[in-house]
Length: 111
Image (cartoon, rainbow, N blue to C red; front, side, top):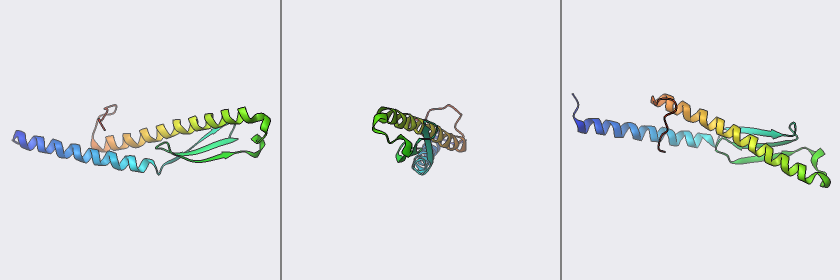
């Protein structure tokens, strides 16, 4: 049988390994790209799964001064769409790490 000290050391090592895996996964999130769209694709925003906006594309048909308010609303909607997709991609990536570490689904890590 292992001593209490050996079990504590093993638990600490496991926690360090899980923390390193989580940090690695966080780093990969910035390389995962998602695209949000609004107005039937007239406004598109590319973002990383970490939420960093990479680019904005606006169809030329929307560049009408009188439609400025509509364009602003579509940019916000496309950003929100990209953010939702980024959150979903991040959740999937973190779930992979948790599964690989044998952590039960739904368990919230303190990192």
